[in-house]
Amino acid sequence: MPNPSLFAAIAPQPLQTFSRPTMLAMSHAIEDQALAAGPIRLLVALFQHGRNLSRASARYRHLRDHADRVVIVGYDLVPDDVPGATLVELSSDDPLRDEWAIMVLGDDYQALLATQEVARDDDGTGRRYEGAWTFDPTAVRAAALVLRGIVRAYRPEAPFDVPRTAGSASNTALEAGASRMLAYVERGAERTRARERELTRALADLERTNEEMVTRLAIAAEMKDQDTGGHLWRVRSYTTATAGAMKLPASDIQRVTLASTMHDIGKVHIRDDVLRKPGTLTEEEFDHVKTHTLSGARILAGSPSALLQCAERIARSHHERWDGNGYPDGLRGAHIPLEARVVAVADVFDALTVRRPYKDAFPIDQSLAIIRESRGLHFDPDVVDAFFSVEHEIRRIAATGDSPRDLFLDSTDGVAIAGSARPRG
Image (cartoon, rainbow, N blue to C red):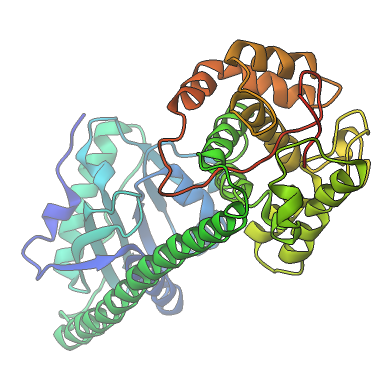
């Protein structure tokens, strides 16, 4: 049931473009002045969506108490929001859905703000409206007659009389001053929006820089090993796939993905002759290798950054076991940080599938079988289930091999589980 546009009713007025916050401020100014001038014979509000009315329900209940009649036009309106008001629910094809207006008729005060949405940013913010406001009694009354036709078309049973107010001659000075104020506000708002865009870009650049610094720090630790492969890249990729399958929030997935690259940062404190030893480690040497978890946690400790706090938890606990037989703290079950439980599966699987100085690479099927057999023993059952729910992606990553050699270097990181040739850090 398309209807004439209220926006078109004020088209002869000089049009301006402004933001939603400015439009709301103007609407409130008109309403507040109407309350001060009183009495209000008719107040009409045109909303784009019922949720906007719900947010302002207290305000419009107050206005309803001081007006002879309040008419609210929109869609998805909730009748209980403003008891006693006349609600007009627009059809899905009515162009009024793109308009926003407030109109007041009083004995000595008449005002109209009528707008039409003309643009919004891709993310739904930065909405722009084109329209005008007027205090001319003749223009306001003409718009009221348009609204009366709209109300009667939807609700013929609802009374809608346009009151004959005393009014006054058009206050051109007031309108001109209001327009100048609006233009000033909009210029300030646009400067604020420009600064916000600059800040958004700067924050994005800072985030990319932080990611690069974290990655390069992780690479620096990996360079102590002689192996040159894609360990960091693969662990990071396995972590992303598994965390995604667990339906973690996007921000958590991003954080654990990046933090996973620092799981072995503590190896910078491990002696080279032990870390690069091709033969079997002695018990003393293995105890020394295990200290990389605590060293890594100390390197990352004390930061206010959520990313580095996550990385600290991973560095310390990615060698803990679900059954409590891991290190360094012997944590069991859910006492192990979730991020560390996810990275543990990724780290072990990669250690199994690549060649080390002390063992050949296990076939992917055999490596997957070892992970599955370790469910509930070495690994969190839920993490293992998520890992296998994206098995096709895991296989694809494993098959990629050492392709990102220019970004990540491999680590010597075998793990003492069933099927391993010998324990390593």
